[in-house]
Amino acid sequence: MNLDDIQSGSLCIIDTNILLYAEQGVSAQAQRLLRRCSTGELIGVLPQTVWQELTHKLMLGEAAMLGKIGGRNPAGQLAKKPDVIKSLSIYQEKIAALQNLGLGFEPCTQKDLLEKAFELQRKFGLLTNASMVLATALRLGAEVLVSADAAFRQIPEPIVASPSDLRI
Image 1 (tube, rainbow, N blue to C red):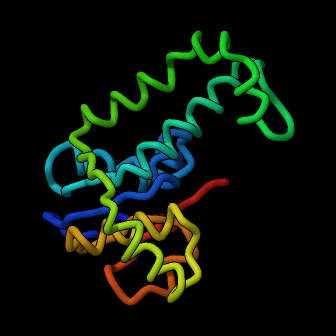
Image 2: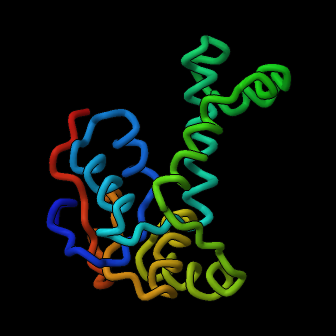
């Protein structure tokens, strides 16, 4: 299912890659999905792991855009530059803007990790963040998991919606 086919009123757990595709302008469907969430047509929720991963990626992106890091191991490079980290702020504004779009923040619980996520890793071979996103989606009873991650194609529920218009 593509993102435009998600039924109005659906509870959607949104993965990090969808937010990055919308921000980078490489998927109009991802941008429309966020607009639909902002108007209340869809209920968009980001698990805690998504907020954290997105914040990290946007921080690294800002540092790279400013020419402060580049090449291999950007996180390692930035970790050695606390003054650069202190000067970064655009990524923080982007994260705050997501909350203003009406996207929910769902904390991850100890049970999500120690029980459900580990079970999902054993069953589907998912990486940790993906298994946490799926565990949160299942706990909340989400109708749709919105992600371009191919690892989710094998899960029986919830329905997985992916952009069909990526321009990468």
